[in-house]
Image (spheres, rainbow, N blue to C red):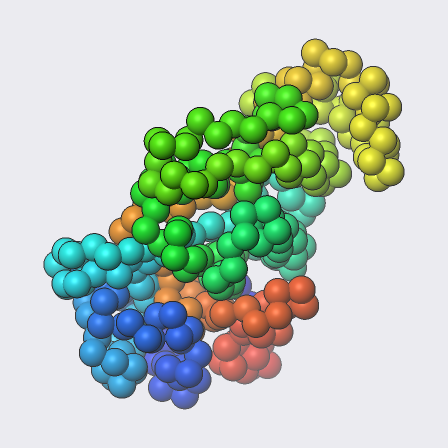
Length: 325
């Protein structure tokens, strides 16, 4: 199922399955302000700065070219063909199943297990964005090998790289809290939105991210700052965390090694998300509705993130016929 698509299969997909109705409205509503890019031969997005007047012209292009991959900018421009007149940009979290630093499977690409774990991670990220930061305009996209969280809240789409980086570190649990009640609001008057500050709930966010990491360790990971003995003991005593008994867990790990663990897992949490994508104001991402030809899966908007199954909802028809043939 995860093999590459042939040109014939791509042509069939764009002529028989693809529909503008599957492109999210946040793209279609301002399509004339978006830059599109295409990969026609599997070497990367080498056909850039494309623009379309509407869904009909996009449909004609996709049917005629059947690209290996299709992309659309997170930015909105006055002149997208030149990438000039930048107005705003979606704020994006990119979680790729094949790049998860901690995962339960041993596959060398993507499988049902790591795709499920990637979805669990993005669901936790979205819950934090909503509950802690009050962000509401969130769209989840299955990208073919992982997920894109695409955020269009008014405050975030005009934010610069500084604020985007701070929000990323908070939501990911990528910094060790200074204390139980730390409130690092030093970003006030430094970044783009003066009223933004990290809530005091951050220690809980960090704790939950660390708990997830420890419970999903296999023991074969190589984590910067965590030696093999510490890794072995984290796995040995992680049963305490099932009951949120952090006191017993920490006592068995030891206070100094516990700090080593926190620092190491903070780095792991940051690497779970592609930070370059989150802070890039001119990034292009896979076009929802397009075909990820490397793995023969559709890039689709997730309507029900709690029950989404990419192996049922993101597989093009030609794949089933390929299996039967």
